[in-house]
Length: 189
Image (cartoon, rainbow, N blue to C red; front, side, top):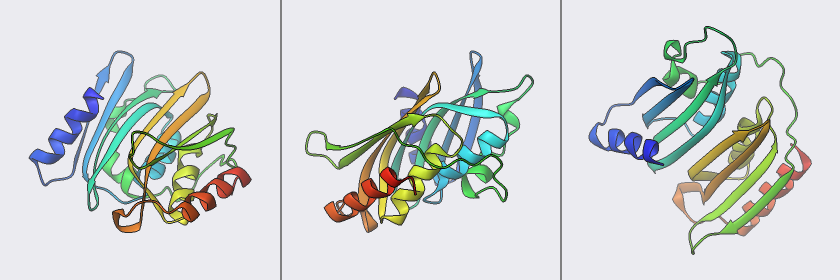
């Protein structure tokens, strides 16, 4: 979370939207802050796949309005891939025109719980596959739900993602919307 705190601080110091990328051992740390569209994470994950970069982990926080702060750790999947050459903001802002190898969503576990009286949290896991997080974020949007905070982790071919849920306009997430979301994820649509 320390890396997310740095992105949040960067967002609070500046009204500008920005990004940075730097090496962290054999991996790359990507930070984004500022104004991003609601589907920014799905967009970014699909572009990363096309660029032969895997998102290993990430944390993000909604700062209000369209403002976000995010910190992601990525791993190049091919020799010579330099994550610094990626247009991170462009990737986050726009869905790829073509998505090669798209798979249907296969979520293995779905849990919704409340932690310490906070917003409901959606926890999903399944085999890591192209579009996993993009499918989950699309399902959220279709059900009128949004993430205030999120955490994504991928280990050994397994994806585990958590989303603190809110309704449209920041209102508490409605039970009916959460039930629709659960059905959507269970059916793979």
